[in-house]
Structures are given as C-alpha cells and as structure tokens.
Amino acid sequence: MDISTKDSKLPASNIGNKKPEGELCKKSVWSSLYAEGVHKLNSSSYVSFLYQDHILSHENLDTSLAWKISKAISSTPEEFYNIYHFLVDIYRDNQSLGELACSDLLATFNKDPACKSIAQAYLFYKGFIAIQIHRLSHNLYSTKFTDIAYYLQSKCSEVYSVDIHPAAKFGSGIFLDHAHSIVIGETSTIGNNVSILHSVTLGGKGNGSGDRHPKIGSGVVLGAGSTILGNISIGDNSVIGAGAVVLDDIPANSTAVGVPASLCNSLAPS
Image (cartoon, rainbow, N blue to C red; front, side):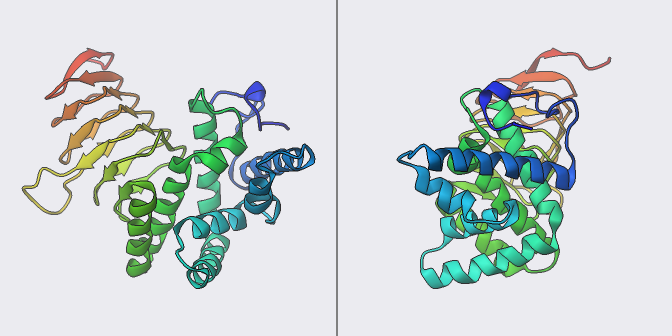
C-alpha cells in the first residue's frame, strides 16, 4: 500500500478505505518511508545519505525516531550515545509513542499542501520532531522522571523554538505548522487532529496557580500568532484567526478573530 507521495495523498482519516490503527499504522508508514529511502538511494540523489542515516540504517520507526531525536539534541558523541540508548528503551516499553508519532506524521503529510511525501515530513519538518520530543518528555514526566523530562523540554526549546511544558496533554494527529515560537503551558490540554501554526501561545493570565491554561478541543485550528490565555475552552472544530487574543470560551464550530477575540461566525446550537 503506497502512501508515500502526494499522488497517493488521502484525507487525514484514511489510508486506502480504512484508517490503519496502532501497529498496523506504524508498519504501513515505516514501509513507505523505507521504500522511498531505497528509491532515493538507487537514484543517486545528492541527499541519499539522509535517507541512509535516518531511515535505511534502522529496523523500525521507533529506533529511527530515537536516533533522529538523539542526533538533533545532542552536543557530543557521548551525549548522543546515552540519549539514544535511553530513548530506544522508552520507545520499546511504550509502544503507544510510536503509534502517536505515526498519527502526527500522517496529519502533517495530509494537512500541508506543500508536503509532497511522508519522507519529506519525516526528514525535514521540525514540527513533527518537536511534538515527538514533547511526547517523550510527557511520558517521562508522567512516570516521575522529571529531570530528564525537563531536559528534553529545554533542548526542544533551544533547538526548535518550541517550548511545551512536559505536563501538557496532547491527543493524536497533531500538526505543528512551521513550528516556531510556540509556547504551551503546564495545564494545557489539546485534543485530536489539532493544527497549530507558528507563534501560538497557550498561556495563563498571570494571576494564579493550579489549572490555569487553555483546553483545546479536537479538530481545532490555531492561527499564526494567536494567543489563548487562561483556563478557557476552545470548542471542537473551531478556528482561531491569526493574531487573535482569546480570553473567553469559544463554542464548538466557531471562528474567532480580533483583539480581544470575538466570534465572526458560529454554527454552535443556540
């Protein structure tokens, strides 16, 4: 089943006639990545070494991700070696991390019209890698490995300009478009199939502790430069316009724009 190129591009919820789940999804995506890598290698592409290093030298998606992330955030060979073997163990013991990575990769491929192949998203889209680093840090934070969780958060902020607190919760199929200057606070929650453009902030209002960050529903689009502050809710399938500052709840199926944001249309029931 070839899902690797734009010609075979399908809606976000489908590959063929049925969305592959879990391990099946991972195997399908890895098969497509590997096949594209072999094609590039055989075509003597100038960037064939990237496919060799990031894809063809690895057994599966999990070990490839562990290598790719370790390479990105390490400063020395010793640091790389230690991080890589640690992350291999984390992926092996938490199969859902690879499955979520698969969902994020497919979301990136399907939602970005400039993305021509799954391998392009995998190799060159920093938003995809940034959200995988967060998923690792969240897993570690949830299992009380807080120091390494904060280390990964710090590295992700330093390398990719994406600063997400390890406690923030994300659903599946997350698309970070451009992935620059993104800040997401500790008690934020983000649903499934959410698109977040550059310079988005999910923050607090600076006047309290505890549960103080936004709750983003599924299918939401957060436009470039939008700021959502406080323990408020953005309903499912809503769109927050570029540059909007949202301080109050937004109902489902709505579009909010402006400073402060107001609804310019809503399909929510009255």
